[in-house]
Length: 475
Image (cartoon, rainbow, N blue to C red; front, side, top):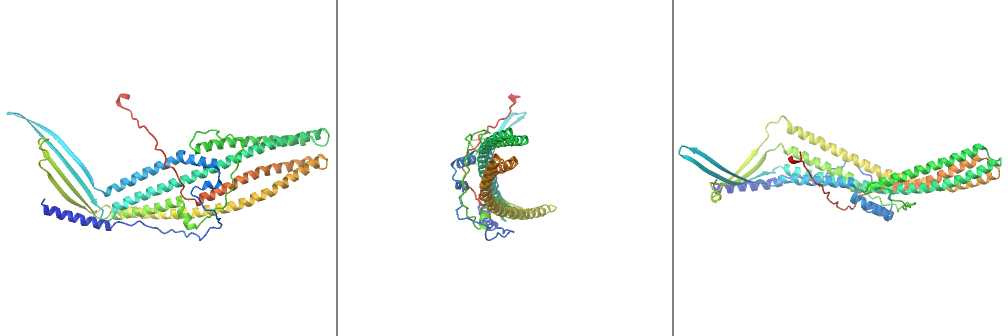
């Protein structure tokens, strides 16, 4: 190949490269099929923090969530999936660069004739390079789709982190509720036993009936069963919390009382469209749409011609010392155009177009469900606040009713049934108030979860995995 010919081919390659850069596909910005409302049904004034759980001002809860974000194995699995997606994206991008291979060979020939035996050697070393011109942006679209998949995987990681933090917060509050119910059950057992003593005395005095004594004994036993159930719940919740923070199940929180955190001020819910694009699950669906659009571009451009360049340089010699004396170089261009494939490529375009529509619909559904979650959380918190206020009105009334019925029973003015009914109502309300307080906090956690964006997470330590394989000597 003459020097003039090589220069012409290099100029042609440069022009094709410039043309290829101009044909690269821009990243799509799809329009949603769902119109977000201008505002939510309710809002507050408190700013929403990235680490939303800090609003409860509970140091132990903060410590538990920090540990869960570091040690939870399900979250670390999400980190591993992200690392795989990042590596796959880098792998997809490698096709945009040239591929260069070093080649070498050595051989020795023995030839025996009547004149004797002759030996000859041949050594060769060469470098071969190939490069596909991305005329239509097929390789760039492939790389972009892979990076969008990686971004969607990162969104999935953020979603898993939000789910984990909400699970830890809810479990912690449920544990606080269960411990409070244990304390209340013990107090109620003591109260019911005292009432049993009173009823027994009244029975001996001929004021109460035997059935009254039996009913009160049954109430004592029923309250003891409530205590057993509450103690079981305390143990199970401690096991659950241990696993959430990445530790073996253990009864690690042995304090008798864990105070429920106070309800923070209502956060500002913000503009619905901004909230939707801040939510990792909605962003994940959005990036899936963009990735599907890039894959559609790949399928379309796969029908167009492919042009690649190849170059090689090789030297050979009969000895190592003269190996680099002479060189042979080669530069070639290749063109490939699909002519007939029984509609394989067109079918792939149709498949990718349907996949794009599927992802658009999935994204739209994710937006609707996100809006539903926010509105549901707002409504449930409002109604739960009203329910708790109603219970707080009922509780003192029930206490007064019980005390008056008890006093009237001791005076012989009413029978025992009224005392029993008022006592059961009072004790049920005492438990309901605690559960309602915890439920109200859970409703706030649901609200935080529905409007929260990505939270701060520490990078996990890479797991040390020793790969072992059986050898022939181990058999």
